[in-house]
Length: 257
Ligand SMILES: [Zn+2]
Image 1 (cartoon, rainbow, N blue to C red):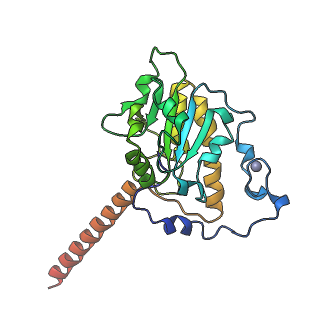
Image 2 (cartoon, rainbow, N blue to C red; image 1 turned 60 degrees about the vertical axis):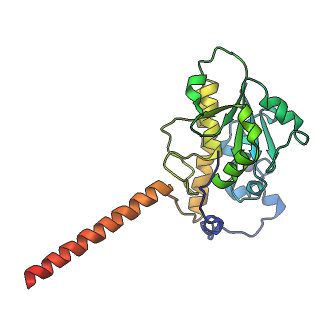
Image 3 (cartoon, helix red, strand yellow; image 1 turned 180 degrees about the horizontal axis):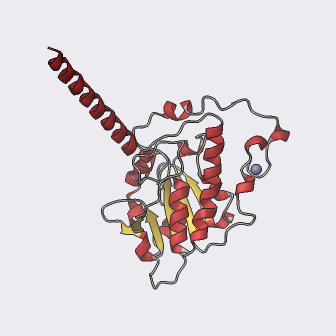
């Protein structure tokens, strides 16, 4: 899963925060829990206690994603027990460097959450008679970075590949998504967990801080990003209107003559 579409210009992303004050606040003004300035602290939106889940999430994060201003994974870390969300950073995850990850990949209950023609619908797994605890592997970065991790680590396909088939519209409106079905990492994990744990409240508890984060950024001047699909639709509509307008005008001119 990824937070951003392929072709999006990185500078475009940062431009949307042009109005957000960038001066680092004094240490005493920082929240010790969420590590954010107190004025934009998100703690009130996190659950009081870590959510109880049986699934373990393994995030394979592109190294550049970590340095991004608004990577969404820390929101998950604030909501889930540390032994249930494990983050590994890198581009290539060879067996000699990551033996524990390869061990997990060999388990029959490990799922790779990544869309593709052979990926199964994660909804159909919830009825699996295995009754075992799942491990989900999620790729975190821009869409291009996630794709790179997928292609550079072919052994990831040892895991059962699954995808989300959903009607959720991304609430992560401060970054462009490739299409109206695209979700950011937090949303993809939140919905997957809800399905596997058979508990809809999990999705709500995990998406609530994301919604709050977006609201804060919008209040500070960030702009709403439509999905690429919606943008294309808006452009087409504008062109159609312009064409109709020209046609109408030339019709009028004809009549005048
Ligand atoms: Zn806080």
